[in-house]
Image (cartoon, rainbow, N blue to C red; front, side, top):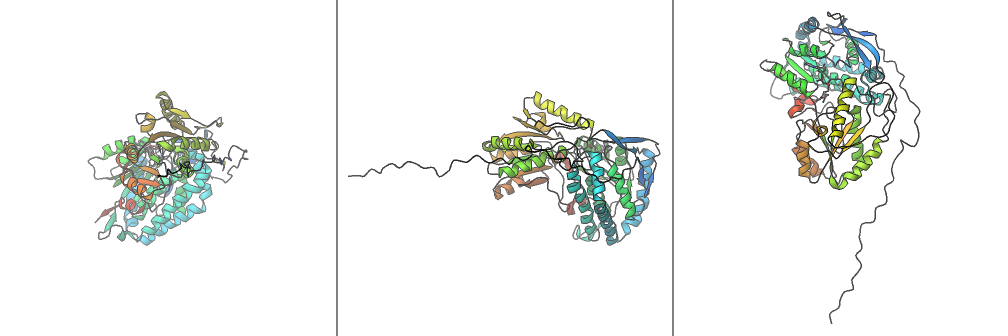
Length: 502
Ligand code: NAD
């Protein structure tokens, strides 16, 4: 007689999950204010820095630099006109022969001294940068200043090793380099531009952004203290018109521009047909991709860092979050809980996570794009947090239900605004990530190493971070594809853009 096996009840090996404890501290107690008190040693008025000296502009005109955290005037900045830009280029041309012939080890010593002096005055510079830019003191103190010094140190090391830059080929500096930088990392962008140009033996005319000139002009005092020969570095201040003069000047052998894609395109058009070398570091709309096997708590920290660092005024900000469908709800819930703990407000308070938007104009741009997101049907989440009555502030914002056709999924917002989209397969994630005019950076969060390698190869982005975000190193080249520009900054590749083969 055949035995019939008694049917055993099927037991699941998966235990029911216990609800996760929420690690919430930020809303449990109020922090005492922790204001930074170091003296930024600001002057009431800043002149141009030409031929090693501070000189009044020949235009006779000045403009105000405001503190975006309270709209108070910080200082008057000289407005450089045509004659001033000419004088800066003339000084840089005069300084070029001696500077370029200096043994590399000697040039390296100047760069090393600049780095050391910057470290010595780091706190003073951090405070000045926070007041001029609006970013939290925690960031200027722990990121902008150490990174700026690191770029000078790194390039000091290259100055006497240029024969190893392009093995088998001799290289020479280009001549006078014209550089124009934006306001989001004023001192750091300046270090990215200045350090490789000087290490390679070029001389420089640089224009900082009109809303953030102060740390550039403070750095001029460090150049003086380092004994840098007059004319090797010249700073001209002003807005777009001054920038256009720096770019168009016939004495510029190379132009290096960091800023918006719109201005980058205009520069590219204006330089067509000339022999000037050009590098463009432009905008971005990076995808930060969360796969279902990712460590979600770490990923949420990476998302927050990716979009709310520096109020989202970051070219490589992870402004498009792509989440795999099975974990989308869980990620959104954790994200909302986390951003409710962000402290928004006075950038000079050491507790502040999100500071002030750099200018009224930028605040308006952000608000207009957020309105477009709401109008086009995306769902907006903003934590309830009180904003200071004066100054330019914007609440951390997360849009869910975003589609690829929404403006907030396509245009660079350059503010604390995240657009969340979902995907089902890895192929779909790659396609959506690459479906943009930009190609500066991307992030991938997954437990699986082989998937990271595959996605890094297929994502059309200059930088791909895996299980982290916004990590920088002077030895690592940074730059974009497509409308994010061309050329690299940092590392051996960055230096190659400042030399020619001979
Ligand atoms: P912006 O293009 O308006 O200005 C950048 C600089 O160019 C400023 O100094 C400005 O005065 C100057 N300028 C303006 N018009 C000019 C002209 N016609 N000719 C020459 N110079 C001119 O950009 P922004 O608003 O200051 O900066 C934000 C942009 O910078 C964002 O798009 C951001 O993504 C980009 N950015 C890119 C990188 C990168 O490495 N790719 C880094 C930081 C910022």
